[in-house]
Length: 245
Image 1 (cartoon, rainbow, N blue to C red):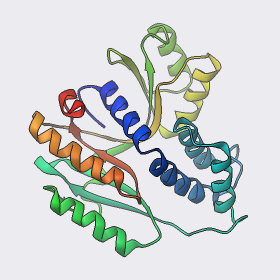
Image 2: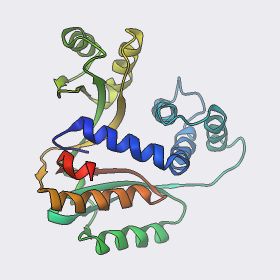
Image 3: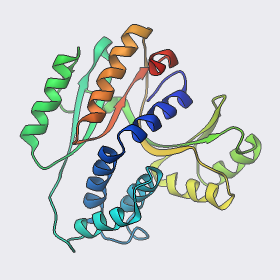
Protein backbone atom coordinates (compact mmCIF):
# COMPACT_ATOMS: atom_id res chain seq x y z
CA UNK A 1 0.00 0.00 0.00
CA UNK A 2 1.11 3.52 -0.70
CA UNK A 3 0.62 5.57 2.42
CA UNK A 4 1.93 7.79 5.17
CA UNK A 5 3.35 4.90 7.18
CA UNK A 6 4.98 2.17 5.14
CA UNK A 7 5.77 0.21 8.31
CA UNK A 8 2.12 0.34 9.37
CA UNK A 9 1.17 -0.98 5.92
CA UNK A 10 3.68 -3.82 6.22
CA UNK A 11 2.39 -4.77 9.68
CA UNK A 12 -1.21 -4.65 8.40
CA UNK A 13 -0.29 -6.97 5.53
CA UNK A 14 1.55 -9.39 7.80
CA UNK A 15 -1.36 -9.50 10.25
CA UNK A 16 -3.68 -10.45 7.39
CA UNK A 17 -1.24 -13.14 6.22
CA UNK A 18 -1.20 -14.64 9.72
CA UNK A 19 -4.99 -14.51 10.02
CA UNK A 20 -5.62 -15.94 6.55
CA UNK A 21 -2.65 -18.29 6.22
CA UNK A 22 -4.46 -21.16 4.46
CA UNK A 23 -6.01 -18.77 1.94
CA UNK A 24 -2.65 -17.04 1.35
CA UNK A 25 -0.93 -20.38 0.78
CA UNK A 26 -3.62 -21.36 -1.71
CA UNK A 27 -3.06 -18.15 -3.67
CA UNK A 28 0.71 -18.57 -3.66
CA UNK A 29 0.36 -22.19 -4.79
CA UNK A 30 -1.52 -20.93 -7.87
CA UNK A 31 1.28 -18.48 -8.63
CA UNK A 32 3.88 -21.23 -8.23
CA UNK A 33 2.00 -23.50 -10.65
CA UNK A 34 1.81 -20.76 -13.26
CA UNK A 35 5.47 -19.78 -12.83
CA UNK A 36 6.65 -23.41 -12.94
CA UNK A 37 5.28 -23.79 -16.46
CA UNK A 38 8.43 -21.92 -17.48
CA UNK A 39 10.64 -24.54 -15.81
CA UNK A 40 10.82 -26.19 -12.41
CA UNK A 41 14.31 -24.95 -11.48
CA UNK A 42 14.18 -21.53 -9.76
CA UNK A 43 17.85 -21.00 -10.63
CA UNK A 44 16.90 -20.79 -14.29
CA UNK A 45 13.34 -19.50 -13.84
CA UNK A 46 13.41 -16.10 -12.16
CA UNK A 47 9.62 -15.81 -12.00
CA UNK A 48 9.50 -19.07 -10.05
CA UNK A 49 12.20 -17.86 -7.68
CA UNK A 50 10.20 -14.70 -6.94
CA UNK A 51 7.16 -16.77 -5.96
CA UNK A 52 9.12 -19.33 -3.94
CA UNK A 53 10.68 -16.47 -1.97
CA UNK A 54 7.16 -15.16 -1.35
CA UNK A 55 6.05 -18.63 -0.24
CA UNK A 56 8.94 -18.92 2.21
CA UNK A 57 8.18 -15.46 3.62
CA UNK A 58 4.60 -16.67 4.25
CA UNK A 59 6.00 -19.77 6.04
CA UNK A 60 4.54 -22.11 3.43
CA UNK A 61 5.70 -25.70 4.06
CA UNK A 62 8.49 -26.98 1.83
CA UNK A 63 6.41 -29.98 0.74
CA UNK A 64 3.53 -27.75 -0.32
CA UNK A 65 5.89 -25.61 -2.39
CA UNK A 66 7.44 -28.66 -4.05
CA UNK A 67 4.00 -30.11 -4.81
CA UNK A 68 2.88 -26.86 -6.47
CA UNK A 69 6.07 -26.75 -8.54
CA UNK A 70 5.52 -30.34 -9.69
CA UNK A 71 1.91 -29.60 -10.66
CA UNK A 72 2.93 -26.51 -12.60
CA UNK A 73 5.70 -28.36 -14.40
CA UNK A 74 3.19 -31.02 -15.47
CA UNK A 75 4.64 -33.79 -13.32
CA UNK A 76 1.46 -34.33 -11.28
CA UNK A 77 -1.22 -32.87 -13.51
CA UNK A 78 -3.09 -29.78 -12.39
CA UNK A 79 -5.41 -26.92 -13.25
CA UNK A 80 -4.81 -24.29 -15.88
CA UNK A 81 -5.05 -20.71 -14.66
CA UNK A 82 -5.57 -17.60 -16.76
CA UNK A 83 -3.72 -14.41 -15.84
CA UNK A 84 -5.95 -11.31 -15.94
CA UNK A 85 -5.57 -7.71 -14.79
CA UNK A 86 -8.70 -5.85 -13.68
CA UNK A 87 -8.66 -2.08 -13.29
CA UNK A 88 -11.09 0.14 -11.43
CA UNK A 89 -11.75 2.97 -9.03
CA UNK A 90 -12.64 2.78 -5.37
CA UNK A 91 -14.16 5.39 -3.04
CA UNK A 92 -12.89 8.97 -3.63
CA UNK A 93 -11.53 8.03 -7.06
CA UNK A 94 -8.73 5.81 -5.70
CA UNK A 95 -7.14 3.87 -8.59
CA UNK A 96 -7.11 0.09 -8.02
CA UNK A 97 -5.21 -2.54 -10.01
CA UNK A 98 -5.94 -6.23 -9.44
CA UNK A 99 -3.74 -9.08 -10.67
CA UNK A 100 -5.81 -12.25 -11.03
CA UNK A 101 -5.26 -15.97 -11.55
CA UNK A 102 -8.48 -17.80 -12.36
CA UNK A 103 -9.77 -21.01 -13.91
CA UNK A 104 -13.14 -19.36 -14.60
CA UNK A 105 -12.99 -15.86 -16.10
CA UNK A 106 -16.76 -15.27 -16.07
CA UNK A 107 -17.17 -16.19 -12.41
CA UNK A 108 -14.25 -14.03 -11.33
CA UNK A 109 -15.34 -11.04 -13.43
CA UNK A 110 -18.78 -11.11 -11.82
CA UNK A 111 -17.36 -11.33 -8.30
CA UNK A 112 -14.90 -8.48 -8.88
CA UNK A 113 -17.58 -6.25 -10.42
CA UNK A 114 -19.90 -6.90 -7.45
CA UNK A 115 -17.19 -5.99 -4.95
CA UNK A 116 -16.57 -2.70 -6.72
CA UNK A 117 -20.29 -1.90 -7.10
CA UNK A 118 -21.22 -2.71 -3.49
CA UNK A 119 -18.37 -0.73 -1.94
CA UNK A 120 -18.45 2.66 -3.62
CA UNK A 121 -16.31 1.82 -6.63
CA UNK A 122 -16.58 0.80 -10.25
CA UNK A 123 -14.81 -1.55 -12.64
CA UNK A 124 -13.02 0.41 -15.39
CA UNK A 125 -11.92 -0.42 -18.91
CA UNK A 126 -8.57 -2.04 -19.64
CA UNK A 127 -5.74 0.48 -19.71
CA UNK A 128 -7.56 3.22 -17.82
CA UNK A 129 -5.69 2.64 -14.54
CA UNK A 130 -2.56 0.56 -15.23
CA UNK A 131 -0.63 3.46 -16.79
CA UNK A 132 -0.63 5.17 -13.37
CA UNK A 133 1.65 2.46 -11.89
CA UNK A 134 5.21 1.24 -12.37
CA UNK A 135 6.49 -2.19 -11.37
CA UNK A 136 9.22 -1.85 -8.74
CA UNK A 137 11.00 -4.05 -6.23
CA UNK A 138 10.36 -2.77 -2.69
CA UNK A 139 12.53 -4.14 0.11
CA UNK A 140 12.05 -3.05 3.73
CA UNK A 141 14.74 -3.31 6.41
CA UNK A 142 14.05 -2.25 9.98
CA UNK A 143 16.30 0.65 10.94
CA UNK A 144 17.75 -1.20 13.92
CA UNK A 145 18.93 -4.05 11.66
CA UNK A 146 21.49 -2.07 9.64
CA UNK A 147 23.51 1.15 9.59
CA UNK A 148 22.07 3.57 7.05
CA UNK A 149 25.36 4.36 5.33
CA UNK A 150 26.33 0.69 5.04
CA UNK A 151 22.88 -0.28 3.76
CA UNK A 152 22.79 2.51 1.20
CA UNK A 153 26.24 1.68 -0.14
CA UNK A 154 25.46 -2.03 -0.33
CA UNK A 155 22.05 -1.60 -1.97
CA UNK A 156 23.15 0.99 -4.54
CA UNK A 157 26.20 -1.07 -5.52
CA UNK A 158 23.90 -4.07 -6.05
CA UNK A 159 21.69 -2.02 -8.40
CA UNK A 160 19.05 -0.34 -6.21
CA UNK A 161 17.53 2.92 -7.39
CA UNK A 162 17.10 4.50 -3.98
CA UNK A 163 17.18 3.93 -0.24
CA UNK A 164 14.81 6.03 1.87
CA UNK A 165 14.77 6.30 5.67
CA UNK A 166 11.08 6.04 6.63
CA UNK A 167 11.67 6.24 10.38
CA UNK A 168 11.12 2.63 11.49
CA UNK A 169 12.28 1.12 8.21
CA UNK A 170 14.62 1.74 5.32
CA UNK A 171 12.75 1.34 2.05
CA UNK A 172 14.93 0.11 -0.80
CA UNK A 173 13.53 0.68 -4.29
CA UNK A 174 14.75 -1.30 -7.31
CA UNK A 175 13.90 -2.00 -10.91
CA UNK A 176 12.48 -5.55 -11.24
CA UNK A 177 15.76 -6.73 -12.83
CA UNK A 178 17.74 -5.60 -9.75
CA UNK A 179 15.32 -6.97 -7.16
CA UNK A 180 16.99 -10.38 -6.72
CA UNK A 181 20.60 -9.06 -6.87
CA UNK A 182 19.80 -6.53 -4.13
CA UNK A 183 18.08 -9.18 -1.98
CA UNK A 184 21.07 -11.50 -2.48
CA UNK A 185 23.48 -8.73 -1.49
CA UNK A 186 21.53 -8.10 1.72
CA UNK A 187 21.46 -11.83 2.52
CA UNK A 188 25.21 -12.10 1.91
CA UNK A 189 25.76 -9.25 4.38
CA UNK A 190 23.47 -10.95 6.96
CA UNK A 191 21.02 -8.04 6.88
CA UNK A 192 17.55 -9.21 7.84
CA UNK A 193 14.72 -8.15 5.51
CA UNK A 194 11.36 -7.27 7.09
CA UNK A 195 9.41 -7.37 3.84
CA UNK A 196 10.16 -7.68 0.14
CA UNK A 197 7.99 -7.85 -2.96
CA UNK A 198 7.57 -6.71 -6.52
CA UNK A 199 4.86 -4.06 -6.38
CA UNK A 200 2.90 -1.81 -8.68
CA UNK A 201 3.96 1.58 -7.35
CA UNK A 202 1.70 4.57 -8.17
CA UNK A 203 3.16 7.63 -9.87
CA UNK A 204 0.86 9.90 -7.83
CA UNK A 205 -1.24 9.29 -4.73
CA UNK A 206 -4.64 10.37 -3.41
CA UNK A 207 -4.78 11.75 0.13
CA UNK A 208 -7.73 10.54 2.18
CA UNK A 209 -9.28 11.49 5.47
CA UNK A 210 -9.69 8.71 8.02
CA UNK A 211 -13.33 7.89 7.19
CA UNK A 212 -12.66 7.70 3.45
CA UNK A 213 -9.52 5.67 4.11
CA UNK A 214 -11.50 3.15 6.18
CA UNK A 215 -13.81 2.56 3.19
CA UNK A 216 -10.83 2.03 0.90
CA UNK A 217 -9.13 -0.34 3.36
CA UNK A 218 -12.38 -2.33 3.63
CA UNK A 219 -12.54 -2.71 -0.16
CA UNK A 220 -8.86 -3.65 -0.39
CA UNK A 221 -9.33 -6.29 2.31
CA UNK A 222 -12.38 -7.68 0.49
CA UNK A 223 -10.31 -8.02 -2.68
CA UNK A 224 -7.55 -9.71 -0.66
CA UNK A 225 -10.13 -12.22 0.57
CA UNK A 226 -11.26 -13.07 -2.98
CA UNK A 227 -9.64 -16.39 -3.91
CA UNK A 228 -8.53 -15.41 -7.42
CA UNK A 229 -6.99 -12.02 -6.55
CA UNK A 230 -3.21 -12.30 -6.25
CA UNK A 231 -2.23 -8.68 -5.70
CA UNK A 232 -4.11 -5.47 -4.94
CA UNK A 233 -2.38 -2.21 -5.91
CA UNK A 234 -3.77 1.27 -5.32
CA UNK A 235 -2.75 4.90 -5.11
CA UNK A 236 -4.37 5.86 -1.80
CA UNK A 237 -2.44 7.41 1.05
CA UNK A 238 -3.78 5.49 4.04
CA UNK A 239 -3.42 7.20 7.44
CA UNK A 240 -2.08 4.83 10.08
CA UNK A 241 -5.21 5.32 12.18
CA UNK A 242 -7.36 3.82 9.41
CA UNK A 243 -5.16 0.71 9.24
CA UNK A 244 -5.16 0.33 13.02
CA UNK A 245 -8.96 0.40 13.15
